[in-house]
Length: 565
Image 1 (cartoon, rainbow, N blue to C red):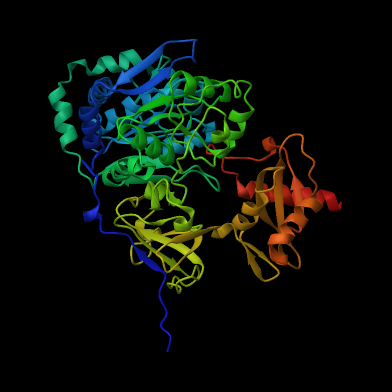
Image 2 (tube, rainbow, N blue to C red):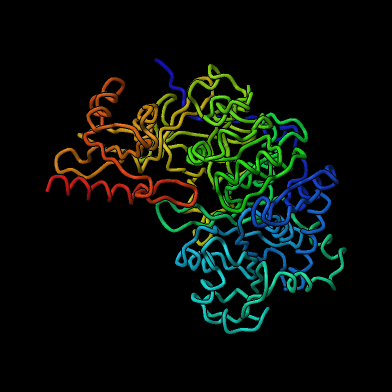
């Protein structure tokens, strides 16, 4: 009788992992600041390059600035576990506020600056923050005015005094700049801490434990309102220690440019872990502008470009692309379109074979940078230290045989403490695994493979189609800039396979050509029955540039209906 190997993988024991240090945010922060001291930790051009002040903080200065915020928070009544909201773009005060919160014993609660008024209302109400530290004006968005519209008590009170019925825990709001109603100016906020002794902050920081709540991040909300994900100090700091190892970075090498919001776990973990743990520096840009990004990378001699593929297109299209000196960019995947710039000479391969989510504070499977393709073999890596992965039948929850597709489930040392407002028993299975909602399988070599979101699987004519498989193929067409395949309801087939495409500018692409291309590589039932073309601005996205598939599915259905009519 043939035995069946179950789809379950175990990473090496956590106790065997090397290169780890303090497992609290306050401990990690103290360690890196003491180790790297007078090295430059961050640089920021306030108002833009050549238009404002160049701000450069060493690790020692970052430590001092964070402690100044911590003292002010103590004076505002922040105690053990108090949630402190941080509504800021990538700028020095974001880091000072985040680590100042940890030093004061609070829980750093990062809020997206992409939030609409309705989303911000949800974030403030759901998080229960007691103090909100914010950037008042971001591009055309005036958060002071938005807050005042959401709750008139914020507009009518005196600086530093808020009594809100809408947000009953919120007692203090401070903003960069001057006071506005009950919103206190930044200088006045910091002045509150002048009477607080450093010894009190140190004593508070020493009470943090790895299992304590450390941060509250929110999902980017691609299918619904953002969910609050509460993580322990240990989960966050394990990842901060790991990123230099995943990057295979040499100490002091990573000068990391990024305009991607640090209020999302992936950007926070990659940027702060990659750069600061290894003694590098952050080159901060508040909001993404491709032309400015190129100037910053050249001026500050960036070695690492922390950007997403949709930003690559804009960088390459920027008017100063051809003239920029990007020779310092050594930590850039040699296969990246950016690496084709004539001044770049890179042999580095990013840790692309990896998988994670906000609930595990980024990666739980990974291969490090420069792992050969024959080793990764199209997988998303092997389980990290302390991690267990299993693949289950989505309906029964039973573990499936090795090689069979099912739902990816995970547990391990970086797994969240839970979603706020949702019982843990409603989130984890009976064995403590998080059911991710992602489809995948594992192989005999201990690797995990990802097949897309299960709720995005298209059921057509009794067969299942993975939109990831279709889109991975279509994106290899030279004329295709963006491809997102969705299932549109159909009376007889159940769903139609519909590919929604944004073509590159000045290209000639039609639906028949796309179908013919797909037919060469895909089984007939996977070939799109319809191909729709869109302008990029037609596709609703989240702040992390994830296409909102529910919105796109509705839009595609409406477009098809109009074509038939």
